[in-house]
Image 1: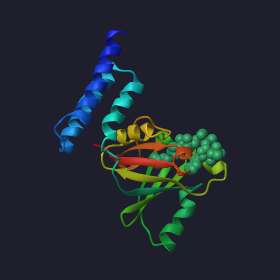
Image 2: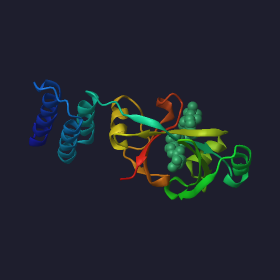
Image 3: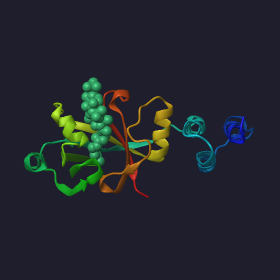
Image 4: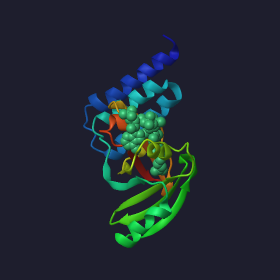
Length: 201
Ligand code: CMX
């Protein structure tokens, strides 16, 4: 056993002891979050990625089930935003309040609000775009459901992976509307391409 292995073991057992065995019940959510960040920060520096994820999960799994506060938006895949916008605006009476290109996803987006929930029309800007491929294979209508997460997308992704969900994004990345986003693979999410999101800090 090299020093690194012993150190990782110490970290893992230490985290377990602090969270599960520590005689005083840890009531404070802030304290647990602080602890989690401290241990995960150290584990990230010294351990391999899998062990780091295990440490994250171990600590989170005690109490933290990701907190979904609402559906942030429904992503709707379309060939052309201009072609479908009249339906949403002139028939449903919704208003498009923003158009934005998300270059790394190779899509143009248009946003409309329905109460708290947004509709995100997604038009591919390249045949390489995930949305273009989905449309090409006959996809129509709702492309993904985006849930707003309160406790952080990074943490939610780690938790989801720890529970057997396949990640498309290992870490959060910038999406439209100044959100940080992460996708879960539809094969492990009841067939629904799932996005987790939170406002960028
Ligand atoms: N909803 C449900 N299932 C979907 C899907 C979707 N939107 N897109 C693909 N799938 C299914 C396919 O039907 C396929 O199922 P089968 O194997 O049974 O045929 C499977 O997932 C694999 O699909 P694929 O066509 O082989 O395509 P890829 O594996 O290349 O990509 C996916 C699929 C989900 C990984 C990819 O589309 C992706 O990374 N999506 C996330 C990113 C994204 O959609 N970005 C656009 C949104 C931009 C934004 O909101 O900011």
